[in-house]
Length: 411
Image (tube, rainbow, N blue to C red):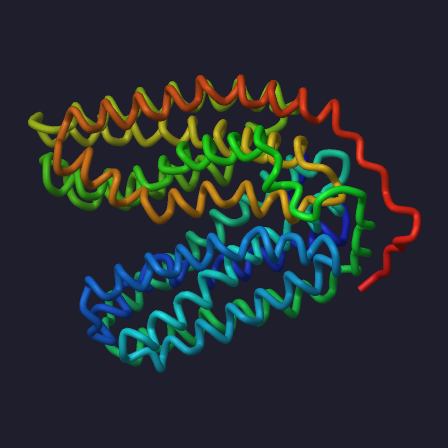
């Protein structure tokens, strides 16, 4: 991906759809919880319970919808998930009780996770010789779209009226509809033929399941910048509060500019395993620096936190690029959606438990908790290369043959 705009039309369509979608998602990501607590006036505890239920629903749908994308055509299945997400998001304006809120947010979260799995065969089909690199490009686009959505959400939060929040919800749903409409300009991808053997092969692939679990453990690092640093900065340091936005914007800028470049040298599963290991060390260093920001002058705390954010984001670049590589390279082409659905289970679980883990260890326990979390990242990174080698050995012994009676049909 040497250019700012992809070379092929299908890649441009996927990128445009992703950009519009993430602008809408950035609105919700920034101000969604505030909408339900400040505008709808649901108790914070009920909002937390509803989001936890949504996480469980998302876990259940990823593998199933990924399999449907493999068998029935990824473009149509992905477009359906975007449409469901738009309808569920639009229902937020009616969610003035806990159960209505829970139903709407579970539908939206389930469709989002399902869409991620359904999109994977499209990335693999249209990503060229290196779909992992195209996936890295899409992550840069994602960060740009979320940043722009977050800026719009900042205006909503500043105004703070029910009307402003409802406009945000409408804009969010509209973005998903537009993203689906753009996606339909993509040429259809024929379903891949089935192969002999069990249907749910990804759930029987123990090395891949282990890799998914290890990736999920490291995915907790995404919450360090959005949960750990803000709470630590406010409660334990004298650094200015505006630095919360400063660390997130610094990280976002680095990802937008350098994610594709970071992915170029990670061109094999073995290189991906080594990148996980480097990422774990970077996360250990960043967590240690964050812990040291407590009890020192404001200028020194700010310098430490910015430095930690930069080091952490470098680790994030390696971690994301490694995940793109091993998740695609170790997944058979005929079951890309199913395998990527399994790989996403770890990250979905990290979304559910990550905030509570960081709060209990790093915020409640304090400085020692940061060292424990950093060590957890480092040890996980050290374990990944062994899991990668196990997965490669299994891949070498598994050579499925397409069934002769099954023909692919375009959707």
